[in-house]
Image (tube, rainbow, N blue to C red; front, top):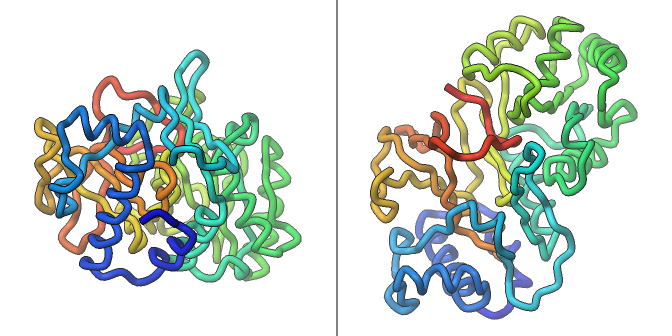
Length: 330
């Protein structure tokens, strides 16, 4: 493959396992040939392009490489650079994005796959720490969801909690569908200052205490928010700067990914050995939307795949950085 112009049409559809593997191998061959840092990494592992015939043989790029190197197709124009959040002095990841339309198509299709059409919601984004810096992929996504919602009350909220609480109460009484998308510590601040019984409202946390609060295990966090807002469950989004796709949870920290995103669990001691369902290990992600960077990402998250194909996040490896977009779980 040399031309990726029809890539969106190939991946954003219902893919069988066979379809997915064919496209993943196609992406691997393309990126081996056209993404220098990935090619160097594969060659250091003595990977021969012609000898890779299954997904299990594809090398996954350690996520930390996005902090030190430009992971992108050689000589391709870059539309924007997404950057990860981090504390002062911490190295941050950079994701060079060559085609924002792939990102936009992917997150729209993924959201509407698990929820209703974006236009049905009043979308309220409580993302103060992300709005205070440049380059957040989460802010970009939330901005588009707000735009596409075409609702007069949709918008970003920085520290104006009282105004947000007023809008939430108004929307709840109106019976209209509402999406409250928030960074974890800000949702907890809102819950403490303005507890309110919500109806027809999805409360979705994107993770991240960012040093503002003590860390909490997921069960404690979700119970606190459920009690404050009178909702049955807290939804979550699993995404990161280095990926262009997201998985979603409708409660209990159990996630489902769209057809173009696949979770694999690697053995903690042998990264080329993959574990069966219900065995915990390191999370590898194949994100076919990452065609212009790297589709094969070895994360620092620990998780397991459940019998029905959904997956759970169980924590993070020791010594890995605190990441703003990862869920606080226990």
